[in-house]
Length: 446
Image 1 (cartoon, rainbow, N blue to C red):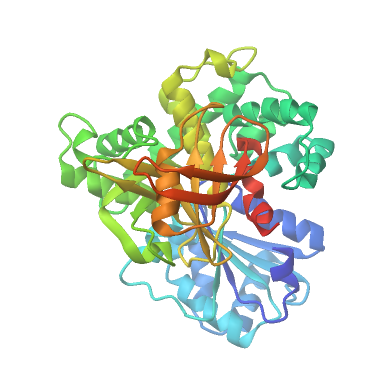
Image 2 (cartoon, rainbow, N blue to C red):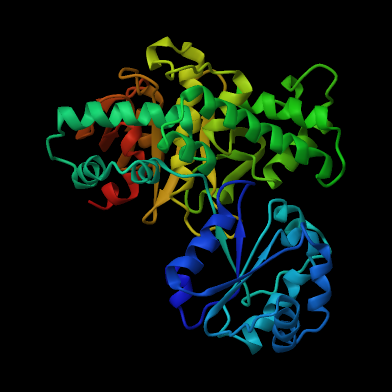
């Protein structure tokens, strides 16, 4: 956001993301650090604020706001923040006038249910005149920064392929990542953890977060039964790592209802789709199959609240968790880290996987496009596991590089094997533990 603020050609910025991922905090922090006067308007709290935007003249709008607030608003020293703008969605189209006629004023818009306003058929995006930024839950590196674990973070940043990993750093990073897996990246939960509040209170905050999302269900487009939405949300948690099947959502939920429910949760950014791709070339989204998809949650905090992961004076050890939950955690946490690789897609980060069905089944957990190449990622919740599907996929798609994420220390090796079909395949394999997954783009550049 700092680069945006300093850009002489900046456009009004619309922040997109789920409720409570920290959008409002980011804007307030930007204003505080830059020393600018924050003019914050919340249209959900005070719908009457819309009357100040009756004109298309930005200077007249500022004059109205100055009179209403009793303070002078100078474009060169202020930031205009339009929060909960979905409650006044026609104003989104007016942002173009700030870009064209008052570029000196930085304008930011955000909203907890903004995605529904953007998807409405009556809304037309002023192309080229507003920009979008996608806000995700905090990643593992940000979590370490919040805890002041700079020494460990620096050590992780210094590792390079071919360099001997530090056993002490691997052990410490693994411990921290398990704690992150229990807390997640939602700011309220991270703040409580940083403050040293007991795990049971962190877990309670996670349950309150889900309760807040459920309270929003009644306001979703289409007015779908909130019980159906809740069933879909629970089905996503239960199906992590597997194909999402509408017929398996729950008793009494029709497939069309399940599909509509999933679409609404995706729009609200509580759920993200992992789309199946044939992966024959770039972009990966060019060969998706709409009938196949997996789904993940916005943050692991939702998973814990939905499945009831216990927490008391301490979080449960990884070995104490049920094997099924360990697998769900691996899938969810990998998805969260991969979404931070954002490749610039207009609607935000995209996730893909590949699967072959039939007499010779196989699956690649995730596929990413980095540096103009397709990179398959094999995911293991422990330290061992075969890579038959990965070997065959790399051979069939003629790739030279792959990533395996498991509990082992980081590594880099050349794989030279025969596939189960007898094909000879040679490729480079980057092995990363979950705590280094966020560094994959930089490591692949090495």
